[in-house]
Image (tube, rainbow, N blue to C red; front, side, top):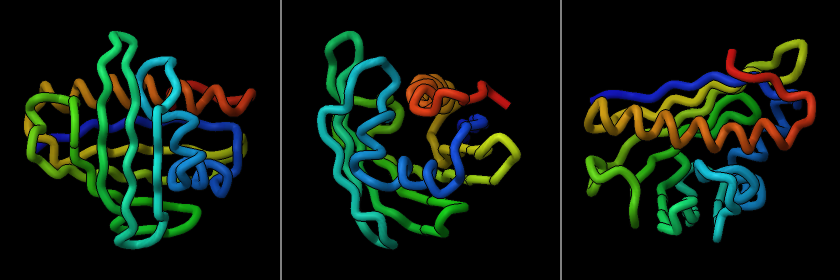
Length: 150
């Protein structure tokens, strides 16, 4: 199994970034790798609560992922299960992977570390890294003073 790891600095307090990670409105504002809006997002931000996100890529294809919140430590950490229900990386069909967000307060706001682990192949890990990179660009744009990669 392999993983994708991304680190970004965001010009917002951890509590604000945390809400963008766990609420349906927050998720809808930045998930999906292309500059297109999320089609639908639901989230029950509690341990064992479900989430589901549907988004469209620039090529017109729609993708849907879902999972559940496994750990919530506001405003420091969120762990979720992750599976593709439609579309996604072909290597991941039927697989349940793990998505973790770590938030650390810094002078300019928050350092966010995203770890998507238990992926089936290096190809899949690089694909997810690219996809999350695009999504994180949208998250960074939500905060005008956002910094790039750490």
